[in-house]
Length: 121
Image 1 (cartoon, rainbow, N blue to C red):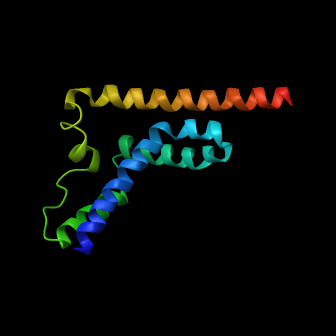
Image 2: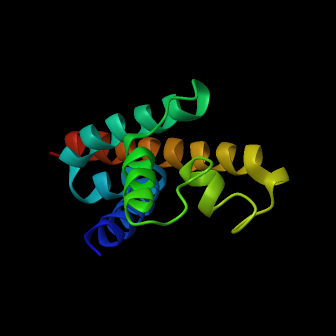
């Protein structure tokens, strides 16, 4: 039972992490210090996509599912829960580009807000 809970909790944390990677820069508009963990999260997300680095959260979920007697993850987290489930596989690159654009817009907005706050002070 504990392994099932761990697997489910890891899956939720993974979804939250992905949401933070895409939209976390907007949180920095509200709390500027959040830009630093967002930069790290985006760097990690970018590295997993570009260099094929395995995410430790995927490993933990797979391990916990197997320990619980369930089928583990045969593919990565995104391939298991999103690609082919939430969106067709043919849109993967498009969605990666859109996610990158959302991140860049959030960073540009962050910089503009910081500049206007500094100039207005």
